[in-house]
Length: 162
Image (cartoon, rainbow, N blue to C red; front, side):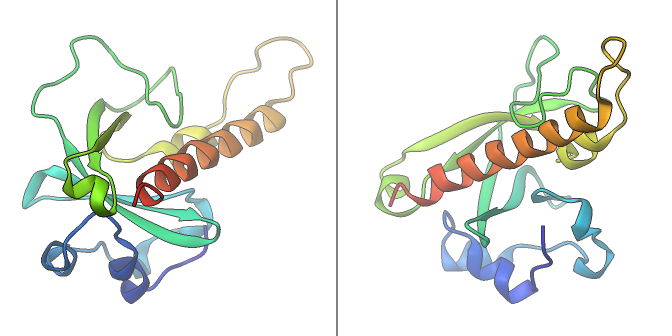
């Protein structure tokens, strides 16, 4: 993922009002390792049930405001994006209002995601070989590509519902 500026990120949010967009507290963009990210995700401690993601769709940023459900999933859930089975973190249910008129009409999309958006680190973590001769690096690359496809598909789904 290439680095985006604060202006790019603020302008990218497709499912927020102008007031919500201006109130978003952004992470320190200088501290982000952009080369190891497939999407940018962060939480605002002042809004514990809100999450923010910026997904590259056709090389353009698509920002999405997510809302975490107040209820936790009863059993250990699997992240729909990184599909990691040995998660070092919790997975929660997020919903996102669609962009445009569909979102104003109350149309939302939900997904299970890593609570702190660690998907990029999860897919890059070394995995044990599944069998003799297993190509660990090729499997890692497939996981990275799958994460990018899941994130881009979600971003496209939210954005293109106008």
